[in-house]
Length: 201
Image: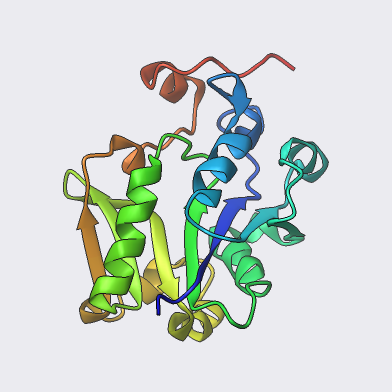
């Protein structure tokens, strides 16, 4: 029997370099957060979305769906790992692990999520990472066996502290999906990706 994974979207960042909340940016007439949630819910039965900065605006943009749980990270300024720790805390006890994705990586294809889930079941590795063009990116799967290490990892080092601790625990899945590495941090990044600029506030 295949073990059930849940999803976590980290959408708590301040988006300072963008000058506008990144989960609310537009892709195909929808917000990043709507688009990513829909993509992940094609693969997981339950999705946890971690919000922090701009929390009321981001919360309002999240689809109303019984499969989505929204949780706030009051310490979002401490970085991405602090949000992952909050997300892990609400993964249901009977779930085998979590697919972790970022609220500013909207161009990852649903096939990429399916491919890393397949690799997780096939290899039995506790960490599975999508890779494009030799560069690892997101999404990433962490088996429940990794949760305690993630929860105790130093926040300034991030989840890479756990990923790099033992390479034998990691499976990489090489995929033809540039969205895996596509960091959208500034308005010029959006322009290069062919996406609309952030609205003026």
